[in-house]
Length: 150
Image (cartoon, rainbow, N blue to C red; front, side):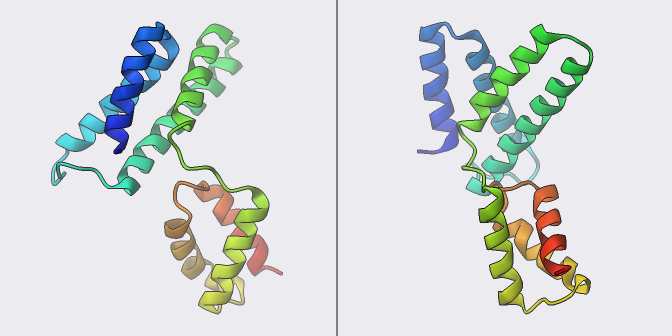
């Protein structure tokens, strides 16, 4: 079942349950998917990779808004953002733990034959593609630096 179909089903459920925060988050996801369909060069169906990127973008926006609202002592708005973040997380792939991330990056370093910090770009390019959606770029970058500097 595509993400779009899942979202439509979840929207119906949220409407029946009268869950306002969940409904707002699901509608935001649906809106982003519809926008992706109307972009230049878009096809009728979105790839799973594109769907994950959309979800990650929405999650990141909510997280940044949440942090701003916390700094401004707006707990009411922060709570809304946090609730929406949790709904979006349901559709994202399970993130890697720090140990799993280090394990994956170590395997890539061995496969690519990287041995020094000079190979950072080569490893980063492959790692970010392979681990997309399961770890953010900053975490991947830190793991690659740490393992190449050993």
